[in-house]
Image 1 (tube, one colour):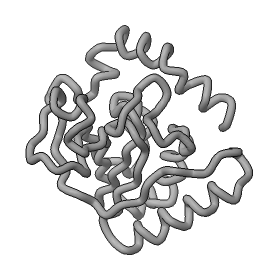
Image 2 (cartoon, rainbow, N blue to C red):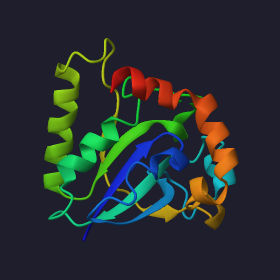
Image 3 (cartoon, one colour):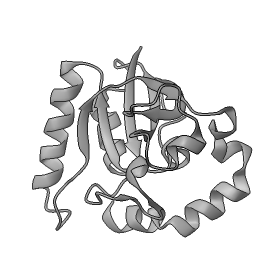
Image 4 (cartoon, rainbow, N blue to C red):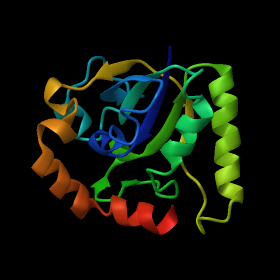
Length: 170
């Protein structure tokens, strides 16, 4: 099993696209990329800790290759927005791929280049590609939020504009 770490805005919305797929061993919502050890949601949401909201995915590369994870990742985000994602604004909601090894880095850069050359977007692709930083799991109430708080999650996602964007571009 290997790890993949993606920042795609609100981590609640980044869990369900990857779960229950063959080869996915688990998904944990959390924080990465910042300068505060063991940050809390209250700290991260201020946008001052340097952390991104991320999902850390444990996967079997034989059953679900990293390239497929990248493909699915791009289809969940607006890679041209440098200031957050959809209704979630601030540095903690920016998009990024945190690579865990050189092969992931190479594949991420190749996929970003392909996205830029695809002509799908008129603006530049601003999703960052960074080395994996310490990962801190989010508080328990954030884990599987879309299952534990179905109605609130559904309402929040509907008003975010994420699904309209996905439908328009993918």
